[in-house]
Image (cartoon, rainbow, N blue to C red; front, side, top):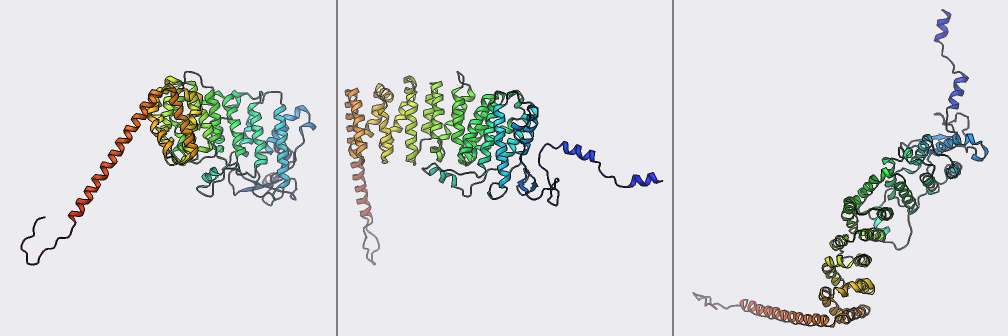
Length: 496
C-alpha cells in the first residue's frame, strides 16, 4: 500500500540527468525561459536575435565569447570549431546600430577566428564540418533582399555618373562570412565529391538570388565565389549555366531590372573563354537567345562592356558566328537613343577587329546601310563615332578591299555631311573618309560622284514636278469653289 502511494508522487529530476543534458549542448550560450532569465542565471546582458523562421519572432540568449584556438589543445580544436560555427548561426538586427553592440563584436571576432582556422587547416574537412560550415553560411547570407521603394529607383541609379551604391548595414559581418565561404570553396582540403551534397542546386540558386543585391561589394564577392564553385564542382556546371540563363530571360523579357547582370556576365566571360571547339549547339543557342537580346534593355550601359567581351569571345572561337552576331545587332539597333547608338558603334568596331574578310562580305551591305544612317545623324556624337571607324586600320582595310560595294552605300551620306552638317568636326572627319576612298580607287569614287549628281538632279526634277502638280490642283480646287450667283426667277441653272 505504501509503495503504491509513493509511486504516485511526482519524481524530481536527478542531477545525473541534468549533467547529461548539459554535456549534449553544442552551443556555449543558454536560451532563456519565458521569464527572460537564462539557465545560468545571467539576465543582465541579454542579446535580442532575429529568428530564421520569422522576422517578427525573437529569442533572448546569453552570448559569450568562446576560447581562442590558441589556448586549446590540437585534439580540442575541431570541437571548438564546430561550437564557434553554431555560435555564429545567430543573426543580429543591424538596422539599429545601438542594439547588441557587445554581442555583435563577439560574433565578428569569432568569424575572423573561423576564417583563420579554415585557412590554416591541414587535414580534409569531414562531412560534419562541411555540414556545419554550409549551415552557418546559409543562416547569415540567405536572406530576403530589401525591395526598392520606388519603381524607377534602379533605372535612376543606373543613370548616375558616379560610383555611389547602396550600403548594407550588416556588411561588416557579411563580408567575413563571404570570405569564409570563399576560402572554404577554394581550400585544397575541401573534398568536392563530399561537399557537393551540401553546396547543391538549392544552395547555388540561393547564391544566384543574392546577385540582385544593391551592395556592389556583395556582388563582387558573389562573382568570385560562383566562379570558384563552377570550377570546382563540375557536376553543377550545366545547372549553373541554365540558372543564369533563367535570370537573363526574366531580366530581358519581363522586368529589365536587376543589379547583378554585369557580374554574371563577367563569370560567363570566363566560362565562354574555356569552351571547347567546336562549339556545342547549347552554347550557340545561348549566344542567339540570351547575349544578343541583352542589347535591348534600357540599362545596357551598366553591363555593355562585359557583354561585348562575351560576344567577341564567340566570334573569336567561331568566325562563322560573325554574320549571326551582326544581324542580331541590326535587329536591336536603337532608334531614339543616341547614347545606345554610340555604344552599338563601339561594339561594331570591336567585333570587326576579330572578323575575317570572308565573313565580312556576308553582312557588309546591311551593316553599312545602318552606318550610313549614323553618318547623317543630327547628334554629332553618333556621326562622329561612326566616322571614327575608319581610324581603325583593320576596318579601313576591310572597307577599301570591298569599296565597290561599300562606297556606293555610304557616298550619299558622306556627301550630305560635307555640305549640310552643322558640326565642324563631323565635316572635317567626313572629308578624311572621302579622301581614303578617293585615294584607294579614283575611278570608282568618280562613278559614285556622277551617280550621286544624277540622283540629285532626278530628285530635284521630281520635287519640281510634285510642286507644279500641287499648284495645278490648288488652282482647280479654287475654281471649283468660286461662288455662283443665281436669279430667284431662273428655272434652270447654267452649267459652268
